[in-house]
Amino acid sequence: MRSMSWVYRLFMALAAVGLALSLLVHLSAILGVPQPLGPSAWMLHLGVFVVWIPTMVVGFRLIREVGFDRKDYWKIALRGAPRWLRWAAHGVFVYTFLNFILCIPMLPPKKAAAAKKPPGFQDAPAAVWRMFSGHWMAFYAVSFATLYSAAVVSAQECDGRKPLKKPDDEVDGWLS
Image (cartoon, rainbow, N blue to C red; front, side, top):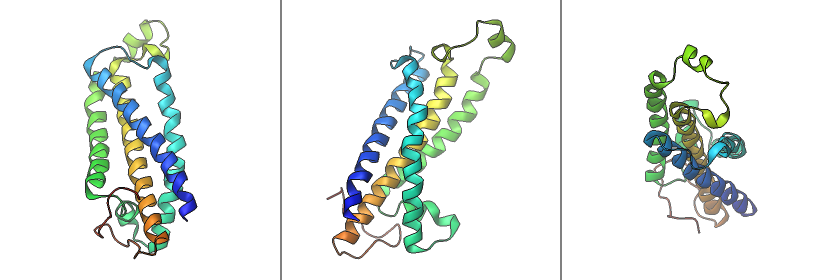
């Protein structure tokens, strides 16, 4: 399973870059400044699928190894992640939900949007950028945390150490 370590790290790196770029898009939408990535920011939408599909495959593999109750999916899938990373991933997910609710009233009315020229991707209002980037951040953050967890669990098993069975088992810090 150690041979999978480079795959986990590759997708973790992609998730980290996606998270950072999503945060950049999100902050510029909140501040009302032009998008620094321009229309290419929409590529982050595709990038979510690049990291999310492997994340789900890895997540199901992590829970299958232990056996689980569906309500504990994320606890088991993130068992190799340090507590702060689990909290951060959950926090970003909660923020995404609240951000979505707060952005709904900020969207322009349909009639006002229809009166303008047909919108291109770069013409999207700040509220649209904010809503999309909030969701991107959630997917990239959870992907990073899950892939990190998988890499730690994999390293623990390959080194002959007792595999992590539950989230509160001691995690040996950064990947070795």
